[in-house]
Image (cartoon, rainbow, N blue to C red):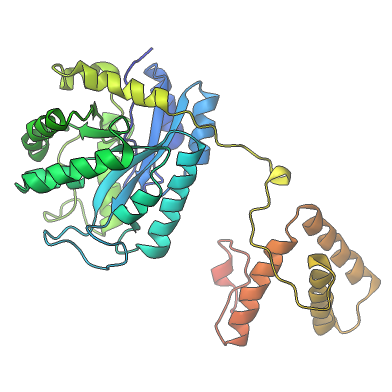
Amino acid sequence: MSSFVHLHVHTDFSLLDGAASISQLVERAKELNMRSLAITDHGNMFGVIHFQQACIANGIKPIIGCEFYVAGASRFEKSGTEQGNKYYHLVLLAKNEIGYRNLMVLSSKAYLEGMYYKPRIDEELLEAYSEGLICLSACIAGELPQLLLNGQTKDAEAFVERYAKLFGKDHFYIELQDHGIADQKKVAPLLIDIAKKYNIPMVVTNDVHYTRKENHVAHDILLCVGTKKLQKDVNRMRFDTEEFYLKSEEEMARLFPSYPEMITNTEKIAAMCNLDIPQYSVTELPDCLPVYEIPEGFADEKAFFNHLVYSGLEKRYGKISDEIKQKADHEISVITSMGFIGYFLIVWDFINWAKENDIPVGPGRGSGAAPSLPMR
């Protein structure tokens, strides 16, 4: 079995940036005899449940994480840094359920509070939600590599001191990558020196964006779609090499022959991550919807729901026949048995508010056919 673990992996849930499906990545990891595999999609956790299920089905230990976008200052400031960075990258992995819950909080707040080109977090949030997390300093777009490349050594040292204190030295790793990019080769000795100076462990990763090397063409086309460019365009976003694939342990060892401990550290991190996200069937899901506050005069949600249904039927049909009542009661019984009354009331509430405020709405179905139907 492989002792190397990929800890920096983007699936196609890294929208218009990752060109590897979860099933493709897991199947390839199994072919390479890998015990563990991480998911670290850009700025979101959309694929983690599907990823966990696919890994477990194939005898692979799933490691749940995310590559977050970190604001240069406060997440509330909608501006970039003095160097022109709108955000930096940072990889966070969940050790346990506490870490997983903190990942979810960080992801939600990134969208709700930090959105500026990308969903961003900041160090204030990291201080509040660092428990149960392992931090990697990320790729060349991370703050630490950028500071070192810009010659800001003192700022880089201050960064290392802050993050080592924030996550603990055993849970903060300086990340080393080599995709044949000039800046990576330039910054590598600087990262190694600062890690030695502060006794920070290092880990090697490959910034996986597609499964096999030959998939780089499809990935490049995907980047063109996301940036609205043509492949022939000179000045466009592109990956400089064809090395962003799921490499074998042997390939990774050849890249870093002088640092076998950095390979071993990937397995050490994997051993620290022991998260099992509870799996529920639809009928077993815990009550996670907001509680809908019903108006006075109704005993419970079902009573108010029935009132709305029959009020709507009277408005549309006038007289409610036995056939209409039978169909309505059947629909109500299905919705009730699934525990979806609260959900229907919440959706009704904001749709009703939109109509009262002359805001056009569709049928509320959420299907691909909805846009073709008449408004209101």
